[in-house]
Length: 346
Image 1 (cartoon, one colour):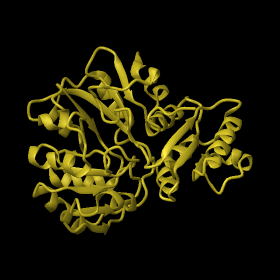
Image 2 (spheres, helix red, strand yellow):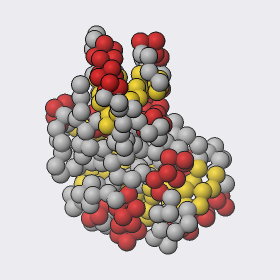
Image 3 (cartoon, helix red, strand yellow):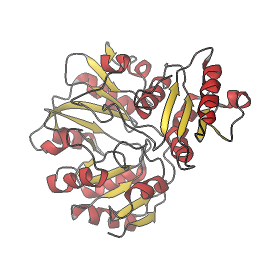
């Protein structure tokens, strides 16, 4: 299969180019497109045949549910049961934006979307290309990240091309993703609101609108989810080809990382280091990248997957990565890094 890339203006999406993508979706084929979080691999979300192609293209396990992307509250009402007052508060506050809400599903949602669960994950992306694509298609678009399953999520069209060339007919290039991490997932299908996946919308943000919201205990305990209720809950995820070793934030973090670097290089391993601006001078390494300043975790989040891919593509054997404080969006950054490392934490 030939894979075509078309550039679309992210501020003023051209109708004729959007129409070209919509026609492909209507034939039950896949289109990769930008959102503010990461690039998505889209299919007509209420068509079982189309959605099944996502799992084939990504080599994604069938037990990993998908998110349906919508462009209006009316579209939510067509696929979700019991839209609670809390859900309405969150939609008013954070949509369009990087928040996915889990509802009880209606019967028209295919089982392949939900991995057979009685719930469905729904999001309204804050991206003009994505919203126009959904609107013109006239139904929700199912879209996990547009990468090979388990690899770092793509934050630009080039990343998608690296993983999806020859597997899908079309990639829309709408520039770099603004956030760079997947959406926060909050489950509102039970009595207590539960964050299943942290993201750019933090627990502190949600507590301004909900009387009670908790973190999934599995997030705090670092456990693998055997039957995921939301995307990204499988333990080995967002992973580079190289081994990634994570060093949680502590007073002796740089000393421990330097010691590991020396040990591995003595073993003739090719080692790369991911650090922050403030610690660049602490390391004498050939392959050294900064994710940004520790005072701006949003920028670190934006750069995370991009730089994991970049350092991995240099052919390193091992990536040594500094951690951040697990507060605010730092919780989401560390969630992705723990999964990228497959639990390989120093």
